[in-house]
Length: 105
Image (cartoon, rainbow, N blue to C red; front, side, top):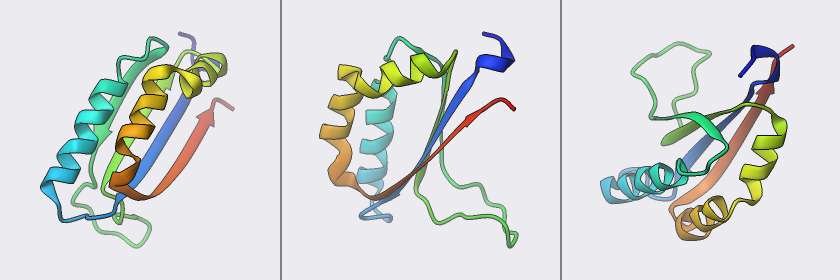
């Protein structure tokens, strides 16, 4: 993987029930299953850090950062049956999703 081709897909999820440990755990479990998509080079599942500055948004529940070798691999991921199954099985857990896709400048 060369730096010039890396495609970063960063997804932020806001849970319908942000105080529900069961819903949080279900989403994390779903993301772990999603990591089986073959085009994923590496992934990271996170939650808001305990940092407080005006520029920090801690309103989300879970983040999912995925690195792909290139845009074509990310495009393949979007239609991969594992990804489609994740959305179908977990979409009831979230009220909002925001995606930031980045490529090298």
